[in-house]
Length: 260
Image 1 (cartoon, rainbow, N blue to C red):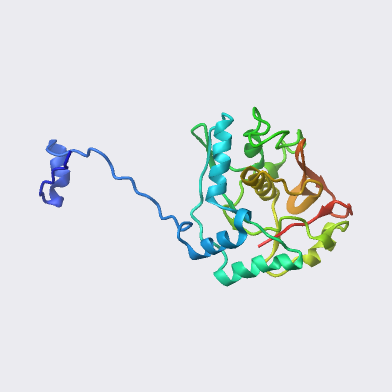
Image 2 (spheres, rainbow, N blue to C red; image 1 turned 180 degrees about the vertical axis):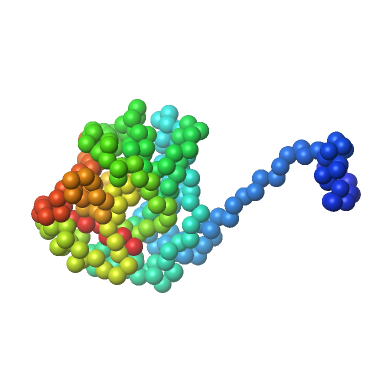
């Protein structure tokens, strides 16, 4: 059915509305800019990293698997700018030859669960698996733990944005104290926060069916109580583990994944 267009003075709109001579039938939705689409840097990263590029598509894949398991969750895609130019993306990919094989991960800070807005925190994210231990395969996604239920770090929202963490811990970082590992941090790199490591590992598993850090731990930058630093890893069939250790400890399966 064709739409009829009537001429009128826009300055008269308030008066015409009040008199009931015109009415608003439907508001036109405003679509926000989507800098993730068509951005040459994003497309370059997607081309170079292949399945190791975890952007919107990977997040939607995870959402679909949640939905198939009866979990209604939508992750709010952040409207962020990709942090690296095309040459820097290529340089990040080339680091693979130096033992720093990376992946590209998009991280949201918010989600909608059963119609309710929630932050992406460790506790809220873990709660998605409460009634469905593994919507993506066999076993569990989260190891059964309660020690961090009352920890402040587990209630802190994840920062939105892109990141390029290494897929595995650096070989030279194993069996060293947290402080000794710091000498491996190069310019532009940092350790991950606990929730970031959890998100990265779970999203990679949901999107590719493969698990990272099955036998190792990423010792990150998040502080727990009693002067402990949080490590995430040992992603086996019994689930992803979160622990806290003194920075003076040296453990053979503890290393660091560094992120750009």
